Length: 549
Image (tube, rainbow, N blue to C red; front, side, top):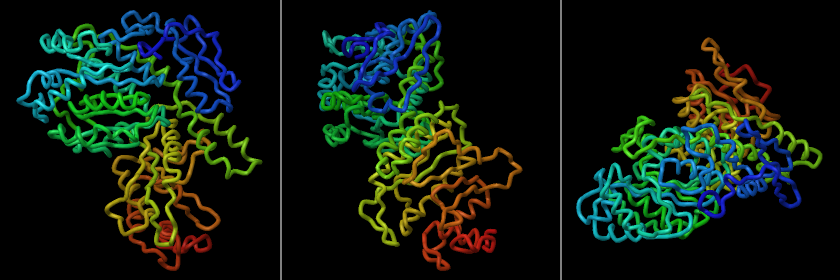
């Protein structure tokens, strides 16, 4: 384990030590006296599963030597929770090492709920009661390896801090500051957390949020694509939200990450769920994502906090650069292309199998800086069960959509693009085949992006070295609004296309949405619509005669 979750290797790593997994020698991080870390040069034989095992063995955790020389920063060789802001660095090390833990912060509002049975919490969203008092005190007295409680700092809330410490007594729970992820740590914590989640698409992220949270806006702003979302009442979440969800953990699998932003109830669930699922990590963050959910603060004032000022003592910064290097060395996004190919390799001919594996493993570059709203990678993956389309085809997306979307997300991350999946039916197209949803989805994304690259749900990026942005232009004078490709049957196959935010392109999408199936004898839904509108013909032979020429 890392720092307090078991015997620690942090600070004791021997660069000469070798681990063998199935008789395969795993590459380790190399250290010297000056460099932070050398990025591991991986071979095609190193699979995602072996990489995850290597992470758990901590052979990728930098040595204390890497963190020396930064005297004003948190010590890298910290192995125990110390009830300081430097504990943030240790929790991120545990998160990266995939050591399960549950962090829940019990600040002034939660401690108040333990002391009083009438009134409301600080933001007025939860009434205090004897029942809430009983449940939250019971939760606060839980003990288990991996539990980390944030409590009010003595300097800011002297009496509440004293009460919390008295309640915990000799508890084995690790204690830290309640403002660990916020206030002076907020900006670094947000940057590090989002980078980690984007670079590890194999890890399922579940969210617990207010029923007023806008998850579409949240995903757009953060790039976090959730495996599940549990919504609880925005007002008076306790007791109904508690009894509805206290045992709602069947979908939390070992290795998953659950992020809770749900007021006092979030604190309770983070602890109680961890007792049920000790191999899942629970991160209770309160108002951390309010700006992303609601577009505004609901009472917190730390979003523009001066990182050098704090009501709770010393503001020693974490070693952000070293944490980001650690995330880069352990990231799993570089394996997604390889993993996806392995899952479908049975359909690839034997004489191309080795070539494809080598291309996928060797051609994945390091990520670049996100390019803001210039281009997004979009797809439509909708689980329709056994529903059949008008042309009697069954949508089999549920069999592969989780794998292909992980591949799409990894490709987007590598090139610095946002990933924009649509995973539910559009109310505007309920009478249409789901394949038409790409039309309204691409047009909607044009409100926020200059270019949209659309790819079907049943397609994979195999060669990550090819950047679709090479066909997009920054030239405002350019009249190019559609870059397309065809196949043996269609001049344009809408399975993949690149479209620019422009008047002509938007009109084409609008017209395609209005085209009925079998129009002009063309069969093929959105493919037929595009080809008729562009060329007045179903296939290749009539190009140049249609209304869109």
